[in-house]
Image (cartoon, rainbow, N blue to C red; front, side, top):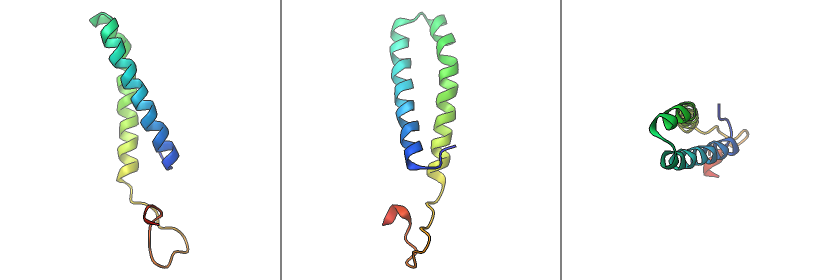
Length: 75
């Protein structure tokens, strides 16, 4: 579960690396070998993307003590 912007950034970077790896593997592996190699990575990609969407779906928390009601993202 992603709870911070730092975790979000790390998840995004991991997704990019996995996608680049899969693109390279597609070019160098036979179809059967690629299917076996890619299946667990594709599941991991789906999990990370779900985590990212869940994080982005959450409203930003209001900063404690801020009378104006601004969120941390709008300071």
